[in-house]
Image 1 (cartoon, helix red, strand yellow):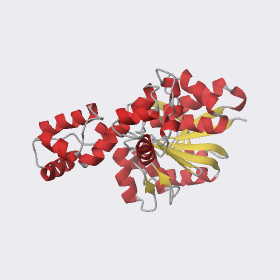
Image 2: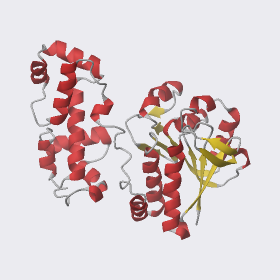
Image 3: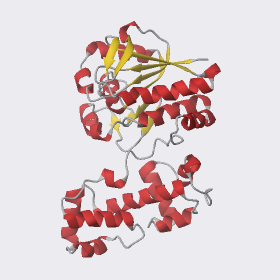
Amino acid sequence: MQRRILIVVFPGFQLLDMAGPADVFGTAALLSPADGYTVEVASPGGGAVPAGNGVTVMTGTLGDVTGPLDTLLVAGGLSVPEHVQDRELIADVVRLAAGARRVASVCNGAFLLAEAGLLDHRRVTTHWLAAGELGSRYADVQVDPDQLYIEDGDVWTAAGVLSGVDLALALVARDHGHELATNVARGLVVYLHRPGGQSQFSTPMRAMTPRSEPLRELQAYIDANPSADLSVPALAARAGMSERHFSRVFTEQTGLSPGRYVERSRADTARRLLEVTGLPLSAVAREAGLGTQETLYRVFRRHWRISPGDHRRRFHSISRERPRGT
């Protein structure tokens, strides 16, 4: 059975929000023609629609599309604020969603789903830069800004840009199994799809860059030496400050307390070790500065809602050596 995918775009949309998922579904159709996908792209006015980067895409007219659909996917883009009040566009999204098996968005396309009332009382994600506004604008939407993609019932939302590829691979895996998703990923020369609970960004990206050169050097030291003594007293002494003053200045300039930054940095180190080494979990915990395997498990569940062993299994195809001790 062919699964019909409709991707909604508009002038100024993010090209990769459309092209990434379209190529995933298109490759799946090539690899498994009997039960693949058909992909359509439609816009409010139809015809030639310019993406935000100037590339023009030919589209169908959204108002002329009728159901049923397997998946309704809404792209994002810098122009979303201009289109979120387009009543005709929102009405078409509502109409088509009613006849779709599932709906999805990439990046700030989530605003269009939220405006249509499709995200009410749902846990969702969007690009981290837009997460705060999405949560404040739509009080009934539960926004988690630190996820690549989230599935909540028949609604899927992805973070930003290339996370749309991760979402589409997850949909293929859900529809046809992990083997087809893996083959699609290999065909597109991308990582085997990442679990949705993986963070949108690493610790240095999550924190602001300190204005102070000594704090920038200290931040780099933390990331490079996860197994060192990174307690507040030790870091304050290294920075030449009192503990109280150090904690206040570090939090003010990075947006994270010293303890939270250290834990996130160590968690990122552990994640990388799981992905590219075969070290037992106990050794990963020690080298990442987390001490014990139990602490490693708790930190992983807190940050990514997945166990270290499950994370390693998802990433075994990119490991440099066969994982042990999972």
